[in-house]
Amino acid sequence: MEKILVVVLSVMALSVTAVDGYVEYTGVELPGFTSQEEETEEIQWSTIESVKMPENKLREIVHYDHIIRIELYFLNKTSGNWTYWALDVSGQELIKIPGIDAKPDGFGEGHSAMFLRRELSAQFTVFLDDSDGESITSDGEYDIQRNEYTDLAEQKLIRFDTNANISVDELPSTNIPLSFSGFMRSYLDPHAPKLETLEDSVYGTGQTITLGDTGEWVDEATWTDLTYEWVAERGEVIADYETILINVSMDLGDEDFSIPFMERIWISNEVSVPVKQFIHSNTSWDTEDDFGYILLQNTFVLRDGGFTEGNQPIPWDDCTGYHWLDTHPLAKTEEWDKNYMPKSGSGFEDSSFNWKPEDAIDFLKVTEPSEELKEFLSENRDAIVTSATYNASKDDTDPTGKAGQYWWNLTFGEKVEGGGWGSRHEKRYRVLLYNETTFYIDPLEPDPEKRVKHESEVRLDADYGVLGGTSPLTPEDISTETVTMASSEEIFKTDDKVIQNFYTTPAGLPLEELDWGDGDGAGYSLGTSSGEQGGGMDLIATLTGIQTQVWGKYTWSVSEEDLMQGGTMASASLDAETGRIISIMEIKGTALQNAFKFG
Image (cartoon, rainbow, N blue to C red):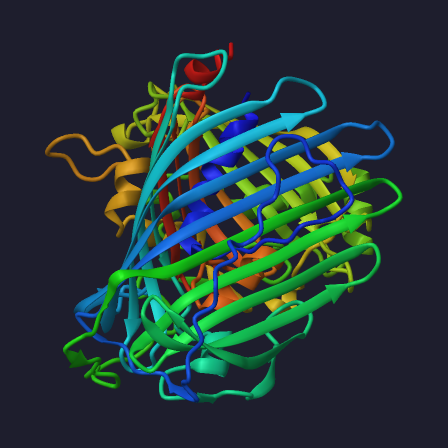
């Protein structure tokens, strides 16, 4: 039953982008829903010869109808087990450009920005079926509001704020519906080069498309250079607008793995956005072990009277005193070379942490509790800590707040060319360290402030040994100086959402430290990322210009998850090289333990 949750939460992410496609893999009898082709309508021909795309203006309003279709099928050829799910979405998207707003970027630096608002609302049906049980059908709805802010000086998207609500009707075997609300604030790297989209290349503002025009666009931002071919095929009347249809296609793969892609875009001299768009894509594979596909489709078209032209040009370049900071004003950096990970830094004694990362590393290097780890680090001299999570269970009876139980879960890894997290190279090593700090009162100490004494016992709690996979980064990929653990917390504490989700703030008293709960609360982590979103999300961002996720290659983060008992989840992350805040997220909703009757 919990499988349906994965689908439900996926609706939020997919619907924000409002971009998907569809293909049909022939020769397979599907359970449940059947794939549906785009509706065939009688073509109304237009005599239009060319289109020059108008510019967007302030107070512009665009109102679309949209339909989303997603199917997934997976078959294990050895066991015969299969899984199938389908998602049908029908709704509306409203896009507005209300005006200019002043917003800070991830460094806390303010900018004049073009404010664009997207409002999506829809009903959906989820269908699940597999070889192990009965099929499940459930209905739901969602509404999403997303505010996007684009810097006027360089026309770069610097941040987007998303609020979403999603609900699902009563599920089989339970009378409890699911309901979640989510919030995400994401900050893009202003120093990153602007991502060119298909729209920019083929039919961007001011460009002229004439019937018969052809061309190709090479996307150099993806893991491989993808080449898209396009042609201005014919003139049609869509939603009472005279338009030119642009056909875009791309095919990637071989006999075992294929990703064909097709997009149709109808543009007009009277509308600054596509009048209609139909996206149709496929990921399918057929190997010795398994067979499967992901069918994705999205169609949207202007509603009757769905375009209102703006009344004022957007004042691009009008951003007086603008500049990009290189590091967050509160960021303190220190060299980390040969320490395997960033250090604690000044201010650590006043932070929420009681066990320095360098002390945990020194315990492994000096005490050498694991000969296998010693050999791994000796053989992999470019290894770094690719993942580190700190947890605490404080002893509230200690007046100094230093006693308690502390953990560092550390994973070391070295990069292998051609290797990734899915690689079978054994280039990672994980250990769990445990620190129990106790206290006692020394009655012979003359200084009252020093009478509380502490003793610590550190041990290797678990040695998971060598693991498959490699690091996505080398030490050379990361700045020689990184943001210290203590100053990363100071940066997080500038955000009200972080304070609300992770800190205790007694009435009338100063901000206290992280609320660690009973050892099952917040976890403070360091992690690596390749900085790539991966095939599907990367493709969506590239083709549409809509960022679906913001990444940092080496990040500090704080997170808490209690979906089972409390129905909540929250996280925040920042760039470990510059201190730029990357994202703030929270989800609140139905306690899954009640919904699915776990426990």
